[in-house]
Image (cartoon, rainbow, N blue to C red; front, side, top):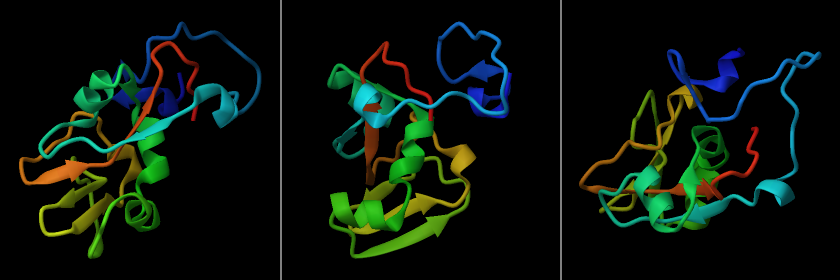
Length: 132
């Protein structure tokens, strides 16, 4: 088991059966086979719930792709963008247009939410192979 396969402690990031393969890294699939979607939920809704309402599922590894001020400004109307360490709600935007991204990408969380902010989420189809 590699550290990239774990979510927190001993919880796997996904429910796939893990098989042995030789090599130094996990195999990669092109985005065309995984088709991640950007979802902008209502204020106070976490990414897991937002993706579920779209018939999709959230995956922490994909949150890394949108955890940047450039991505936030592209998808949301950020007046400012701030990097915070271990923010459980990042990437998100407040009522005042203040965007937050997480400086520790290993701490991105689909379940993080705050009543005064809206998350930016990335979702995939359930059952798709989604290796980062």
